[in-house]
Image (tube, rainbow, N blue to C red):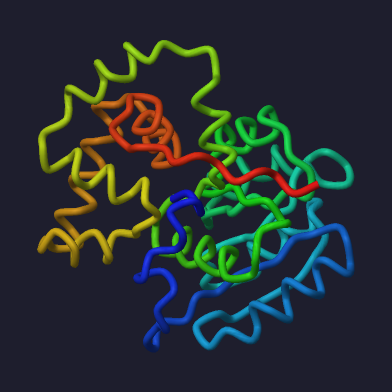
Length: 239
């Protein structure tokens, strides 16, 4: 989902008893403290640990019995955060990663996406946008900052090829992909389309296979590049 759509009501609405468990991994103490304080104030979020963005985040994730999202600052003080995204996503305890960046370049965003991040957000965005991103990623959704979507669309890739891939999808699969691109998770998609959660997972599995994508984030990129999902003008990156 892009924040130019503003946040969907589903993402901003107060949550029920489901608790989202997160780890915050940020190298700047002031930023880390602010993130933890804000997230801890949300009734549906439990901050399990706060670390730097180096190897210690892998240990923190491994020690968590149940973990929904790692908020990971990229590229990290030692430049290894992108590599850690892959480790967090493929270990014996795979978790979803929301990449956070103080500075922005298209190359950094695309590196995070290719490594397997389920979301990418600029730290300059308002707190409510961060909350929407965490909730989306935790519930199997995808969140891409609007400026990231704009720049991914400018990557040297054939739009015709992406459009050809989209044609492989059924009407229902396209509906599921559009909702996924708007930041909805499995349960929200199921509710919106009157489907079971298992049916949504089946549709997403077929979407990934047909689009030749290894994860949901890459499928969303194809959706934007093909024109299946309309892109609104991006907000400028704050100086």
